[in-house]
Length: 364
Picture 1 (tube, rainbow, N blue to C red):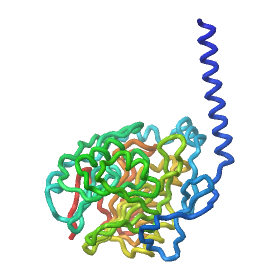
Picture 2: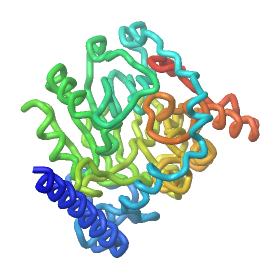
Picture 3: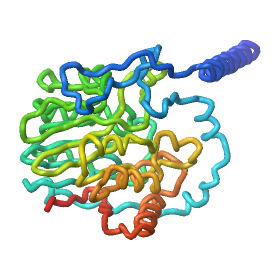
Picture 4: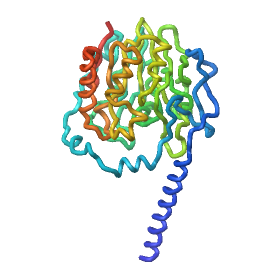
């Protein structure tokens, strides 16, 4: 029995080695070669010279400025390599304050509520929106801060916006719960997201998917557009970049709100400003940026985020995507500290609007 057991173990080890070796070889020769451009022909395209979203020969969406394919070898290098921020992160015990959002959720005034990480609740011109809602803890993710589920306190919901398919932005159990409570809410996301959303919604929830620089079909009280960011998508082993990632511009009642999803830095902020003009409230991620060599293609650091704010001609910056989930190497309180330092260097500290979790504010 011992010999058979040893043979089985050795066989499994060899199998893993062969699989990993094959994966490393394939990823080294894989590249995103653009073959065509696509969009939703039923929706309005806002950028006049826009061909559509680039797609490569394998049917994968591609960043139009910085093509990116995730590499298992780089992930293992990060996870198994040196951790220069380990002690600083361990010693950083500061945590975000969690408030009670009941007053905001009971109000009917237009405003923005941060529910932690990238989850935003927005009221604008009589309409209500949830963006990247995550109530609970998604699979394979650890928390810095525990946040109570606020779904039962939300009385009305018109739109649910999903920036991309990563689990800290697109949580199956959360979206199923929302669809069950609000069977008439409309779900809006990037091209290719239909496979997930159609399997999680109820029969009456409408799903719309758009390409970059396209405007979703809504009523006259609110306009919602999908815009490019620098990121990628994957939930399983074989679906890399088969669903489109992006951000949103939401307009109504004389206000424009930008939600940046996940993104590395690029010219897409200036391009968005060219299409939409000044942004009143610029909601952008400032965390999950270390180690920089690994995170830079997909997550802004605080300096990048502030430069993006300047590029997009924003009036008020609302930071998100920090201090809630443990996704990277930097200490949890560092992103906001560095963002404030960057803003103060340019005498623009008064343009920041940092929030506690479950804290909101009303529009003037």
